[in-house]
Image: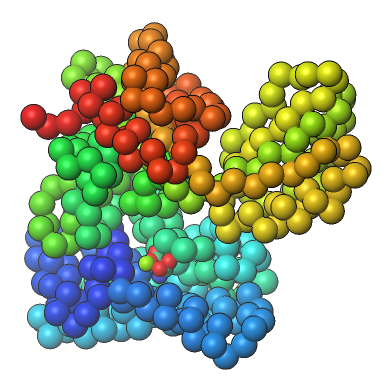
Length: 408
Ligand code: ASP
Ligand code: MG
């Protein structure tokens, strides 16, 4: 008997009809004789709605109370799904994250799972029932209710699969898989059948919201495979598997996908003295201000001064500017310039480790389309360029074409 873990996102359980259709799918899976754990998100836009309520009630939202509030969303789905399963004659039991034994650190609204003690889930499965678990939540080491941050239900699924000896989980949402580019931008983007967790990590980090970065990281660390698929078509989707499983596959393309991200802004701290300690002080100030940094570039020095530019999520821009401006005298910077008219475009592919020329092709393609590159960063399997926001879709389209990723 295998263990099957199925996770359903918000759109998959958005209304009573969709919940019944999920129950039908779970019932079929159960009737094959496997042990089944189902992890659910809050219905549709419920989490947004709860956040809106909180904002209407108060200008301050203590994070402990936010967690207490937001966990209600997924909890509601678990009970409703169990009722829909009962209607089909399938025995099921609902569990909050805390009941499921998901133990987290104490960071409210962005907690990390530190341990899983799934005794009650195990008992439920042994009794022949389906376990339906509320995603995105747990109980902290100091026994408070916590949540993992937006999109965090994937973490529950991967952690439960691992702790109960499973080797994979199925992630159902309204997208049929991972694509070679965002199909809204590139109409002939292809669904990828299999991709490595390493590549998926880069894709999750550079723009695709399909899988939560931390869930992929957990999957990579523990060798868990993820099947990303649609609860609307129920067709096979994309398998995300350990890199070693793909190594001997000669069919693997050099580039797996082109991604883009329009959620960041650029800050330039202009003409700071080019001597040891300045960058250290600048970035310590930003860290103390709670600013999340992404790319960092320091320009060649002229007359003993240099420009330092970095990108941050647009939501962190006010904090970044505040930190830079209030300490500008201390860094000796002439000015601090914010630019929210930028976007990132990336090419990701494990093949670039062994094939030279990927960056040359990327830069030549952007040049031929007169798209200026403002910043560049790389990892062993990714190249990212910052370009003007209004050119990013053109950039994605021409790169997708240049690396021949489309279906014909
Ligand atoms: N309901 C939460 C959110 O919308 C968690 C999740 O869906 O994974 O962010
Ligand atoms: Mg959601």
